Image (cartoon, rainbow, N blue to C red; front, side, top):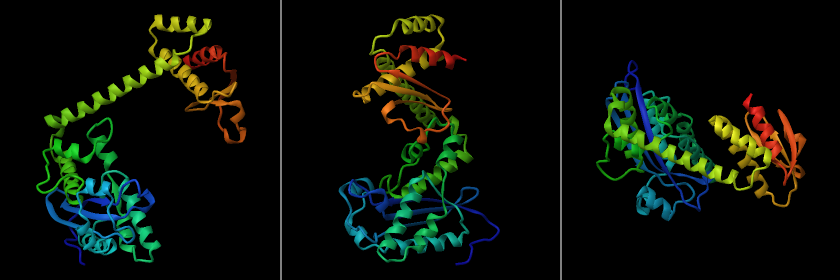
Length: 322
């Protein structure tokens, strides 16, 4: 099919629904529906596509899949094979000279490759699926950074904040989610989205959730760290850093002591341990499980016994102060 306009550039946003459920491992997922939205570089809507698909292998929808996607078994039974559907998608991509198919997250490419492999396993043609899979481009991280969000937010939350509600059906529909993704990027690149009240509320809600979770983790770690009585030297050091108000040193002390106590609790039969410091992490390993051949780039290693680790905690904390 000829390119729509060789002098014009187009963007493609896509979403896919796949077989899912506890009985469907990641490496056996197959495509159930495809949604495509095409726009020009000024974000003017140009074209769209939607189709359900019949899997090459596992055609029976699980209960979880029906609940999530709202697809009906009868729809899937009368749908064309997914490779045939992707043949139509490939024609559309060629028509608009699309090289990047924009999706939200890295799951789509993994699942499409799984669908391709399932076709191959069933001795069915899956090349069209593979052609689309190779054009998948995850824009989640790019948009998340652009929106200055502390972490990724799902499509439904973002689209709702930007005023999109599906005209027909719900989210977790391939067409509706592709449309949502198109409208999200359009809002980010063409509007003053930071002054969007609903978006600001969503962002603050996520920041508050992260702060609450961090507080919970810190409180749990501190309770664990202080669940075993401090040695005399630890008491002296902990009192000193608490009085000086050195938050970083207090966090290091709590973190290290909690890590050691967790390792002791995890290996109650062990008496001696190694504290191993790497360039970017610390590990506590029972000496009986330590394998020098598997431990590279060690900065320092200290041995200690179960009932006497206080000096190790203080010495390591003082080294980390420098």
